[in-house]
Every structure is written in C-alpha cells, then in structure tokens.
Length: 59
Image (cartoon, rainbow, N blue to C red; front, side):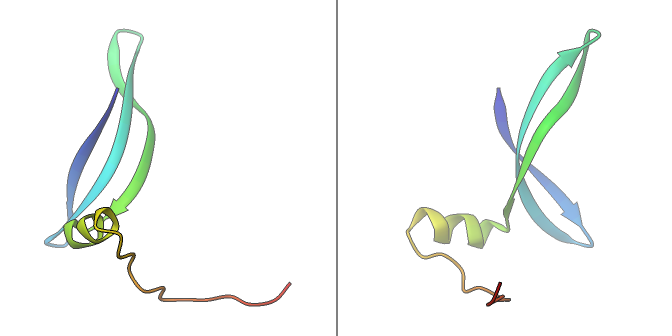
C-alpha cells in the first residue's frame, strides 16, 4: 500500500509517495518516489507543471 509521507529537510517540507511491506515481520520501505513541495504537487494536479530548471540538448 502506498502513502504520501512528508519529510522535513532544513526547515522545508518535501513529500514522497512511499510503499512499504512487511519483511521478517517488520514494516520496511520498499519503494519511494519524490513528489516535491506542496506547491509543486498542487500545480501538477491543476495541470500546471513547474518550469524546468535545467535542459540538456544533444546526443
């Protein structure tokens, strides 16, 4: 089952989609996907993706 988990890093809150599973009877994180800040998540849900910060062109 996946859940959205907030994590604080240097006073900023970032969100991750986290899947956990019981391994040897203990819950363990088995997969995670970075979602971003709350503003980024809302913008994606509203159909406005954030502007790219870096673009690589070429082969």
